[in-house]
Image 1 (cartoon, rainbow, N blue to C red):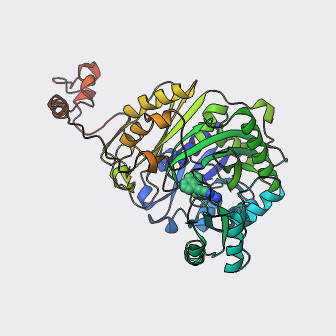
Image 2: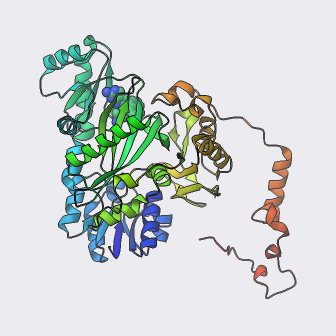
Image 3: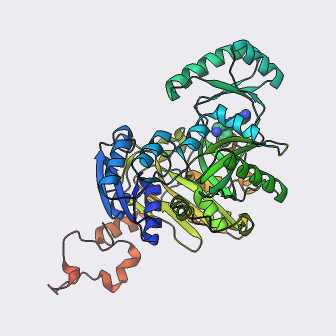
Length: 503
Ligand code: MV4
């Protein structure tokens, strides 16, 4: 195993990686931008180095600086987290060229899966079902002919895209040429690659993805599925495992397809194979994410595997410690993403200082947070504040626990989606497991937060608590909250702003 590792990321995922390293006795080196000098990940790592101004292009995306820091501090490996450079093949190559281990897949697998047309072709050859489509080598005439054969509506997608960017639904032949032109232009400027291709447009599909894990010795296993259909603007909000949609047979077939996909691309480390499932329960390969994903905790809680530790082990060359037959799903896990955003205004990202963060705690409740009381949320980075994950024996159990935990999650000072999530997890359609990718648009269009009057008694109590200076009214009778009046040597008489447990 490695003795020292560079965490090439920030926020909750950097914290998650640092914690796994602490357990394993791996020393950690954090990097931070000027905006993150006091961030949790900066404070928790054994060492931390500034890498530049707040914009990611000048800090977290500076692969050259990251490699420099890793070499200068004697690291043996680099964990990229997700986002930033996690799926950048050139970065993976640069890390390896410097004699360091990239905790992720081979650069070749990243590159191939980054080209959606090449990935589709490879999957089709490997016997993994893909959405009927056209790979787009020809001119407009060839597209028109292919679309006629597929039947409208069709979807124009960018070969260099993914995650829903640069897609266009085309309802009829008359609209196709203009859509192709617009999609090409958009793709060229967004991904530097104007190539587009066609797929038959599936109406109201479900998004089910399989976690895979592969070692350097040719072994691949899957760790079952996550259902990620509750999304807005191609950003997931809620994920769960198992999927309420799958039965044993479909789960087995999709798992086998995911493993075949990983084998076909020579995959190593943790990855995710995304599928769409249509109304007839047919499944199709969509894309493969060559990184650890935001929603990995639901798999961890249901399968009982620490995915970050597993990533580190296989990166260090260890064989997978379990065979497929030894893995199973137990109970149900749900994750809610807590974002600094305003669901009543098109999920517009919100900024500001977190005046107070109180995370719910209890058996089977997990919070992966990268932000705490006093932290500033800026527009430079993803507005994800934390992930709230619960486990229950059944889906109903997990749903009740999630509602309980959301009700007790306090985040003051910035607008968050917590009130929105409280209603989603209580929505009858969600409770019935009826989630398709249009769930939010269908059930929560025009949503407004509940207008609750704060009772006078609460305002009075808050004002009194503030005046008395207590951390919370319940603490005021505790002897530790004695002011030490009359005792000049009492530690409670110290009138500076020292707070135990603060930073
Ligand atoms: C599709 C589709 C329907 N038909 N492909 C969006 C994200 C990107 N990874 C692919 N996406 C879709 N591809 C075909 N042929 C519908 C979507 C889609 C979607 C997929 C997964 C989760 C949420 C979604 C929301 C809108 C559209």
